Image 1 (cartoon, rainbow, N blue to C red):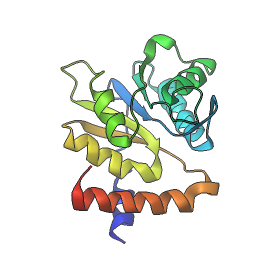
Image 2: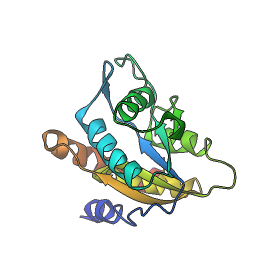
Image 3: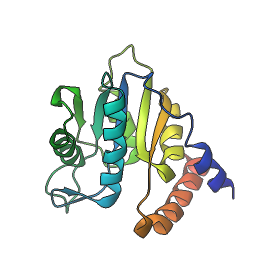
Length: 170
């Protein structure tokens, strides 16, 4: 029950365009095609980017053994194909975990920036916010829906990851 409460609390505060940077956390790429979970994150990011055209987007995700391109590159292609100006995009393509996503994305921020928006799946926000806080980054959030086909599996996995972070850290 506690992890469910954390996951629900992770979905606030909702981003309102106040932050100049948003970090989109990666997810699996099938060859060169964003997985359904990543597409949902990208759809949420597109909506947010269109509403707040001043926000720059950090696309965060490396390349797995079974991926032909990095998650960041897959996100870049998708966003550009859907009308987002490439000048608004910063790529972080070395990360292999949520912790590295945020750590390496933070390094792309100007030194004076201490706040950013996180865009990821709704179930993933609590852990992402916790990691960001541990790295001295204040956040607000944009929650992407979770594909129904993987929702049960992903929520269970995330509950275990939240417990691990609580008990032993990142």
